[in-house]
Length: 190
Image (cartoon, rainbow, N blue to C red; front, side):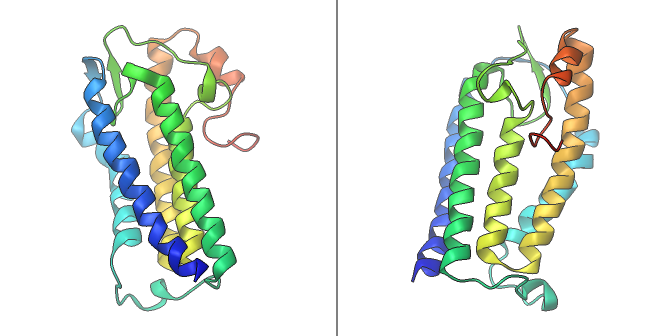
Protein backbone atom coordinates (compact mmCIF):
# COMPACT_ATOMS: atom_id res chain seq x y z
CA UNK A 1 0.00 0.00 0.00
CA UNK A 2 2.76 2.50 0.95
CA UNK A 3 4.71 1.60 -2.21
CA UNK A 4 1.66 2.15 -4.42
CA UNK A 5 0.85 5.52 -2.86
CA UNK A 6 4.48 6.67 -2.96
CA UNK A 7 4.87 5.68 -6.61
CA UNK A 8 1.70 7.66 -7.38
CA UNK A 9 2.93 10.73 -5.44
CA UNK A 10 6.28 11.02 -7.23
CA UNK A 11 4.82 11.98 -10.65
CA UNK A 12 2.59 14.53 -8.89
CA UNK A 13 5.67 16.06 -7.22
CA UNK A 14 7.51 16.29 -10.55
CA UNK A 15 4.50 17.72 -12.42
CA UNK A 16 3.89 20.30 -9.66
CA UNK A 17 7.56 21.23 -9.80
CA UNK A 18 7.49 21.78 -13.58
CA UNK A 19 4.26 23.80 -13.40
CA UNK A 20 5.83 26.04 -10.75
CA UNK A 21 8.99 26.29 -12.88
CA UNK A 22 7.04 27.39 -15.96
CA UNK A 23 5.06 30.01 -14.03
CA UNK A 24 8.12 31.36 -12.19
CA UNK A 25 10.09 31.66 -15.46
CA UNK A 26 7.90 34.53 -16.59
CA UNK A 27 9.43 36.84 -13.96
CA UNK A 28 13.09 36.62 -15.06
CA UNK A 29 15.25 39.58 -16.06
CA UNK A 30 16.08 40.30 -19.69
CA UNK A 31 18.80 38.03 -21.06
CA UNK A 32 22.12 39.65 -21.97
CA UNK A 33 23.95 36.47 -23.10
CA UNK A 34 22.72 32.92 -23.76
CA UNK A 35 24.72 29.76 -24.28
CA UNK A 36 24.71 28.92 -28.02
CA UNK A 37 22.15 26.25 -28.95
CA UNK A 38 24.75 23.92 -30.50
CA UNK A 39 26.69 23.88 -27.21
CA UNK A 40 23.53 23.13 -25.19
CA UNK A 41 23.47 19.65 -26.71
CA UNK A 42 26.58 18.71 -24.74
CA UNK A 43 24.56 18.65 -21.53
CA UNK A 44 21.12 18.53 -23.11
CA UNK A 45 21.49 15.11 -24.71
CA UNK A 46 22.29 13.23 -21.46
CA UNK A 47 19.42 15.09 -19.77
CA UNK A 48 17.01 14.17 -22.57
CA UNK A 49 18.05 10.50 -22.48
CA UNK A 50 17.64 10.51 -18.68
CA UNK A 51 14.13 11.92 -18.98
CA UNK A 52 13.13 9.34 -21.60
CA UNK A 53 14.46 6.49 -19.48
CA UNK A 54 12.72 7.60 -16.33
CA UNK A 55 9.30 8.57 -17.72
CA UNK A 56 8.70 5.89 -20.36
CA UNK A 57 5.50 4.10 -19.35
CA UNK A 58 5.92 0.32 -19.00
CA UNK A 59 8.68 -0.16 -21.57
CA UNK A 60 9.76 -3.63 -22.64
CA UNK A 61 13.47 -2.99 -22.32
CA UNK A 62 14.73 -6.28 -20.96
CA UNK A 63 17.15 -5.93 -18.06
CA UNK A 64 16.56 -2.16 -17.86
CA UNK A 65 13.20 -2.78 -16.20
CA UNK A 66 14.53 -5.39 -13.80
CA UNK A 67 14.95 -4.27 -10.20
CA UNK A 68 18.37 -3.50 -8.77
CA UNK A 69 16.72 -3.09 -5.34
CA UNK A 70 13.40 -4.47 -4.15
CA UNK A 71 10.47 -2.09 -4.30
CA UNK A 72 8.69 -2.15 -0.98
CA UNK A 73 7.08 0.33 1.38
CA UNK A 74 10.42 1.44 2.83
CA UNK A 75 12.26 2.08 -0.47
CA UNK A 76 9.21 3.72 -2.04
CA UNK A 77 8.65 6.02 0.94
CA UNK A 78 12.36 6.82 1.24
CA UNK A 79 12.54 7.64 -2.47
CA UNK A 80 9.43 9.82 -2.28
CA UNK A 81 10.81 11.76 0.68
CA UNK A 82 14.12 12.32 -1.16
CA UNK A 83 12.23 13.53 -4.26
CA UNK A 84 10.15 15.92 -2.15
CA UNK A 85 13.22 17.24 -0.31
CA UNK A 86 15.25 17.60 -3.53
CA UNK A 87 12.55 19.41 -5.48
CA UNK A 88 11.78 21.60 -2.46
CA UNK A 89 15.47 22.49 -2.22
CA UNK A 90 15.53 23.37 -5.93
CA UNK A 91 12.45 25.60 -5.52
CA UNK A 92 14.05 27.33 -2.53
CA UNK A 93 17.21 27.93 -4.58
CA UNK A 94 15.16 29.18 -7.54
CA UNK A 95 13.22 31.59 -5.34
CA UNK A 96 16.41 32.80 -3.67
CA UNK A 97 18.04 33.45 -7.05
CA UNK A 98 15.09 35.65 -7.97
CA UNK A 99 14.96 37.33 -11.33
CA UNK A 100 18.54 36.28 -12.26
CA UNK A 101 17.29 32.71 -12.83
CA UNK A 102 17.05 31.10 -16.24
CA UNK A 103 16.29 27.60 -17.48
CA UNK A 104 19.32 27.79 -19.74
CA UNK A 105 22.83 29.04 -19.08
CA UNK A 106 22.49 32.79 -19.46
CA UNK A 107 23.64 36.11 -18.10
CA UNK A 108 20.89 38.58 -17.28
CA UNK A 109 20.92 42.36 -17.38
CA UNK A 110 22.44 43.57 -14.09
CA UNK A 111 23.18 39.96 -13.16
CA UNK A 112 24.39 39.53 -9.59
CA UNK A 113 26.42 36.78 -7.99
CA UNK A 114 24.21 35.27 -5.30
CA UNK A 115 26.19 33.77 -2.40
CA UNK A 116 23.57 33.55 0.33
CA UNK A 117 20.84 31.11 1.35
CA UNK A 118 21.22 27.81 -0.50
CA UNK A 119 24.04 29.39 -2.55
CA UNK A 120 26.22 29.98 0.50
CA UNK A 121 27.72 26.47 0.52
CA UNK A 122 26.61 25.04 -2.85
CA UNK A 123 27.13 26.95 -6.10
CA UNK A 124 24.46 25.05 -8.05
CA UNK A 125 21.75 24.14 -5.51
CA UNK A 126 19.04 23.90 -8.17
CA UNK A 127 21.04 21.15 -9.88
CA UNK A 128 21.66 19.52 -6.50
CA UNK A 129 17.93 19.48 -5.81
CA UNK A 130 17.17 18.00 -9.21
CA UNK A 131 19.84 15.32 -8.71
CA UNK A 132 18.21 14.43 -5.41
CA UNK A 133 14.87 14.25 -7.21
CA UNK A 134 16.29 11.83 -9.77
CA UNK A 135 18.04 9.77 -7.10
CA UNK A 136 14.87 9.56 -5.03
CA UNK A 137 12.90 8.49 -8.09
CA UNK A 138 15.53 5.82 -8.83
CA UNK A 139 15.25 4.48 -5.28
CA UNK A 140 11.45 4.41 -5.37
CA UNK A 141 11.20 2.82 -8.83
CA UNK A 142 14.12 0.48 -8.18
CA UNK A 143 14.65 -0.40 -11.85
CA UNK A 144 17.98 -0.31 -13.66
CA UNK A 145 16.61 2.23 -16.12
CA UNK A 146 16.00 4.70 -13.27
CA UNK A 147 19.52 4.18 -11.96
CA UNK A 148 20.99 4.68 -15.45
CA UNK A 149 18.76 7.75 -15.90
CA UNK A 150 20.20 9.19 -12.68
CA UNK A 151 23.73 8.55 -13.93
CA UNK A 152 22.95 10.26 -17.25
CA UNK A 153 21.31 13.15 -15.45
CA UNK A 154 24.36 13.51 -13.22
CA UNK A 155 26.61 13.55 -16.29
CA UNK A 156 24.46 16.26 -17.89
CA UNK A 157 24.56 18.34 -14.71
CA UNK A 158 28.34 17.99 -14.40
CA UNK A 159 28.80 19.18 -17.99
CA UNK A 160 26.35 22.00 -17.41
CA UNK A 161 28.15 23.03 -14.20
CA UNK A 162 31.46 23.16 -16.06
CA UNK A 163 30.02 25.42 -18.77
CA UNK A 164 28.26 27.65 -16.26
CA UNK A 165 31.34 27.91 -14.04
CA UNK A 166 33.46 29.08 -16.99
CA UNK A 167 30.99 31.87 -17.77
CA UNK A 168 30.68 32.89 -14.13
CA UNK A 169 34.48 33.10 -13.78
CA UNK A 170 34.64 35.33 -16.86
CA UNK A 171 31.87 37.56 -15.53
CA UNK A 172 32.54 37.86 -11.79
CA UNK A 173 36.10 38.53 -10.53
CA UNK A 174 35.06 37.25 -7.07
CA UNK A 175 33.90 33.88 -8.43
CA UNK A 176 37.22 32.14 -7.77
CA UNK A 177 36.96 33.11 -4.10
CA UNK A 178 33.40 31.78 -4.06
CA UNK A 179 34.63 28.51 -5.55
CA UNK A 180 37.25 28.14 -2.83
CA UNK A 181 34.60 28.47 -0.11
CA UNK A 182 31.80 26.34 -1.58
CA UNK A 183 31.02 23.08 -3.36
CA UNK A 184 29.70 22.80 -6.89
CA UNK A 185 26.95 20.23 -6.27
CA UNK A 186 27.45 17.97 -3.28
CA UNK A 187 28.92 19.25 0.00
CA UNK A 188 32.15 17.51 1.03
CA UNK A 189 32.26 15.57 -2.27
CA UNK A 190 32.14 17.92 -5.29
